[in-house]
Length: 517
Image 1 (cartoon, helix red, strand yellow):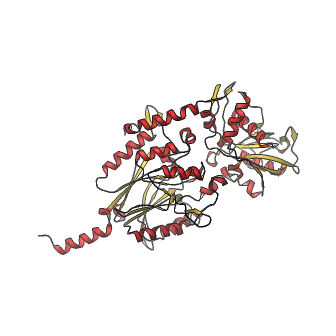
Image 2 (cartoon, rainbow, N blue to C red; image 1 turned 180 degrees about the horizontal axis):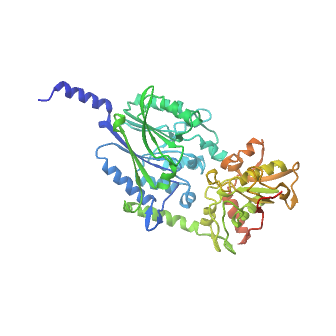
């Protein structure tokens, strides 16, 4: 006969662990509105039909263990279907695929707060961000601090990245503030404890595990790890070269279970991660699954939904805007015809002497023939806005030099500048930030005067420091104008007015052999 005292003790231990000792979380990063799969060598990957099939199969393997499906950051923006439906197509598919929560990231706000609130109302799952509130301290009723399952007593807290404010237009995040991560998480954990939570997880993918000691990310993560009551942490990764997976770290409060993931490998629904939260660190686990046609058959239940979405937006996307007389080219480290076209269009809109556009903003070039609305979107899928400023010739020279530092340095980004109203030569053999030959710089065909003031137009992203362009802020340049119309709409309107597009490379930026003066 079994020892009754031993059996009673075991029952107490199991009860204290909750949920039979384990909870499974399926999570995907940065869906970016990827509805359709992509194909390579006959294998299809990602897309909602395959993703839904993978999620259904992984849930079926869980047996009686609770399973929660979470999307982390940037789900709604990134494809024409998402753009032309303001994210609604993606929410509908996430509903169909059985998502339980979305931790919001910067791109969730790209359509503006009213649109995001409408999407939250249409979703059958909560939008999570414990650290986003109104500036007056009030919460947003459609934005929750955590997912709470009262039946199983499981809570999953979501923290939005601090970059929600810096990576959005001011009007899209007006009146919001991002609060301290540890304080927001502590408040959410306390609420969950009061509700009787037995298992608590925390998503903070905006913080990069492996960041240097003393960095803002490292200090924020240490503050979170110092909290009691969190069974599992999900962080981002400081480098795509670091392996994804689970690690156990010791802190004063005991062992902490951390999963670190590189968003680069999990974007667009290409992979699903499964984390098991167990009663002890030894029972926790992490596994990643590739979502492609070699492993899964498409989920046929989504076919009508996907067909309906494509049919609904096809008419809009296929509308002819203009005609390209010849094919335009796109280059990220030298002057190109597509860059010249866009820089000219935006300089005319800005009414400035000079316009500078980072090459990475441009994602496609026009082929010869009809230009459709979809092709316009594909050119500038992340949108943006024009800002203007005034600066001296010396300051303009500094920014032109900054643009040359990106050539041959892909890890720094695609910040090489496409230009309008200015021309120059540069020598890559000269020291960084002294590669532009000052005597060759012309503004409106006239030699640059270092002490003269010029009007400059650029895109809000780099003016705010994006792509490494801290120079605008460091030089104290003030914004003299801001165009609320998206550069997508500006480009479409300009193309329609042109009728026929014929842009060419004109020698605006010339690369010299070593020895320039």
